[in-house]
Image (cartoon, rainbow, N blue to C red; front, side):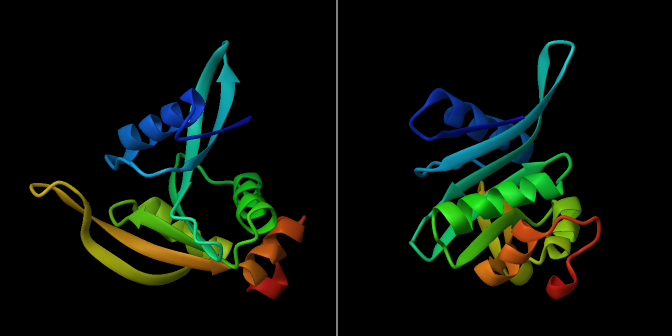
Amino acid sequence: MIEVGNSNNPTGRFLSHLYYKQTGININTNYTAMGWWNEKNGIKNWNAVALFDNYTGNNIDIHIWAERMSLDKIRAVYRYVFDQLGCTRLSGKIPSNNKKLLQLLPRFDFEYECTLKGYVGTVAEPIDLDIYKISSDRARKWIRYNGCAKPASAA
């Protein structure tokens, strides 16, 4: 299941707090949030959060925490960014210590751009962020794709 919120409602604030608990990074700007969960014994088990901020018209930044990424989650992100907002680019800001997610992003056609040293965190415990990007052209191949392997045109 998916829930959506923003910085002005309880769902969005809860998802931002969950992201903070999982990453140690607090997003203080205006944002939109998507959260994915499944239910077990009547309890929501949250397994992914995507926070979107710094919308410019052409670009929006995404901050991701996920126990497991799936094609359905990536498609939901790409549809929101490229179909609803009309962006031409999506930038991912990922903590450099999140090796699992950093290895996964290139599989969904994100390209590495740079590392922001000590960009978030505290003076005592700075956290580097790796910046990844994907263009709308590359993302649209994933939105249309229905198979099990990476789309040939996105390889």
